[in-house]
Length: 144
Image 1: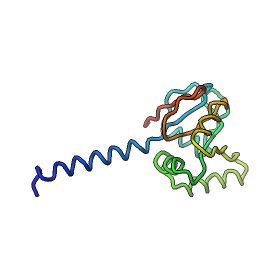
Image 2: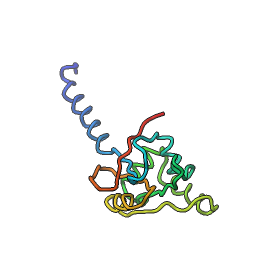
Image 3: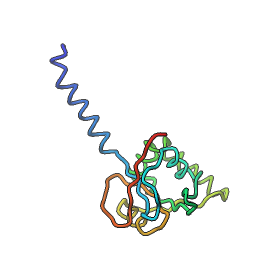
């Protein structure tokens, strides 16, 4: 098979990968009281693994997450934090049991998570698809 014959299949393959990657984009949201437009992957990981509990301004971070069985949660933990969901859960069980942290707040749907983030000063969360909601600010992720 020569390159001319393979080209259409190769293009279709590249397009399918591109579409698949786009459908798994996770959006980081914060309450509008949080003065933040960008956040590094490392800082986000520190927040979601219980290592950072306050914003640079000194205000307490209110952590929100989706249920462990939710597909967006699983994608967030695996692709953004670099852990498997069971590792994330185990870490938080240890932190809570040892008294080092309080369990993250949980919302059952992405819409509910966005609402509680919008209504909770200092809150942070994640959703798969952008929605327009008063009180929510989207934060850009960047590599350090």
